[in-house]
Image 1 (cartoon, helix red, strand yellow):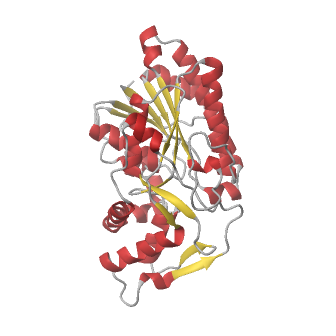
Image 2: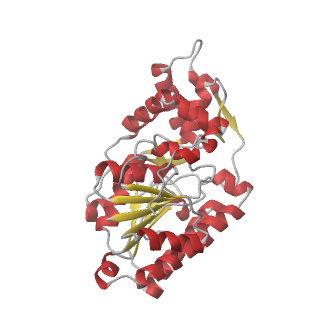
Image 3: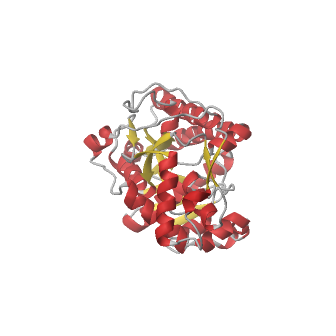
Length: 355
C-alpha cells in the first residue's frame, strides 16, 4: 500500500512512519504542518528510504491537501495530525478547535472527493483510519471500571472535547456518505522521541538537570500506559484488518498513578545515571492540580485482541527502562528540542518529493 500519514513528524506519527518503513513493504507519505511538536529529526533513520516522502502541509489547507492526494494517490490514510497537550488546550483552546475539528472536517471532505473518484476496486480497499484518545470518555469512577468502545463520551478538557468532536465527524461521514473509516482510541503513550513537555520526558530531563519534578495534586491520577511502538503495531493491524465503521480501543494493560510513574523514573535514573549527591526522588514536588483533571483512565482492549490478535509486547517496566535508556543516550536530540534549534534544521531533514 501507499499510506498517507498526517502528523507523521509528531511523537506517535513518527513511530508509525518508522514502523511502516522498517517492518513493512508499504510506501509512506508523511504530511505534517511542522508545528512546535513536529520534529523531522525523529525520522532521520528513514529519510533516505525510497519508500518515504514528506509534504509540509497544514490539514486545514484544503487546496494543498487536495494537491497531495492527486500527486501521491494513497491507498489509505492514517490521521494522526492533532494538537494534543491538555495544558496548552486550557491556555489556548482555539488552536485545538481549528486543527482537531476544522482540520479533520477538511480532511474528511478531501478524502470523500478523492475516494469517490477512485476506480471500483481501489474504492473498495481504501481506508481512512482516524486515531483518537481515551480522554474522550472522561474519567472513571472507582478502581474497577474500564473504557469500552461503547462507553459514552464525556470529555473534560478543550483537548478531549476537540478530539471527541473529530470522532463524531468521522462516524458521521461514514454513516452519511459511506466513507470507509476505522477509528482507534488509545491510552497514554510513552517512549523515545516524546516532546519534553509530556510527563515522562519532562521528568527525565528535569531530573538530569537537577530541577524539581512537579507532580499535579498528590499524584493520584491513574493512567493506562502504552509503549509507542506497541501502539504503532496496533494501528497498522487496524488499518490492514479492522472492520469498516468499527472502533478499537488500544491500551497497554498498565494502570499506574502519576506518582508511581515519577517514582519509577527516579529509581531507574538512580540506577542508570546516579546523582552526585542524594536520590532523584528528593526532587519531587507537588503543585496545584490543573482545572478539570480527570482522575482515572483505563482501557478495555479485549476487542482488538479478540478480533485482530493484537496484544502489547512491552510491560510498563520493560518499556520504561527502554525509554529512560533512550533519553540518556540521546541527550543531544533533547537539547535541540529544548533550545528550539531543531526548528532551524528542518529544511535539510526531509527528502524532496517527486514532481
